Length: 148
Image 1 (cartoon, rainbow, N blue to C red):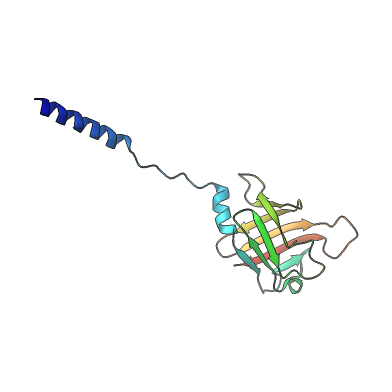
Image 2: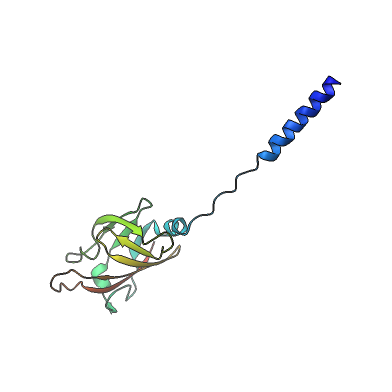
């Protein structure tokens, strides 16, 4: 009789433990996490005409060899920036999403707000750049079309 009670008690405890040990459901990725996975890589300017525009005029020849490396720690670095265009794309910096819900806009540490459209194979960056001084040939509405 004692064996039956002990067996029943052990069975009940075992069932309770099994029922209470549900596998954890992984939390869904946030929009920022999804966007970061797409955005964080090295991007190169496309070679097509109008891959880079300034005020809707082709400016691609001034950006030949330009690459932008976006890191998942919210930093970036550039290479291939031609002389005179360093203000448009500094050699390095930090960035952040505009907000947890607005992941289509990033803000560089210099205050430049950049619209981004990104998928696994293309990146489009759109922003206005103003030097605050006299016109240097870099002020205006920039668009960069890039590929990994």
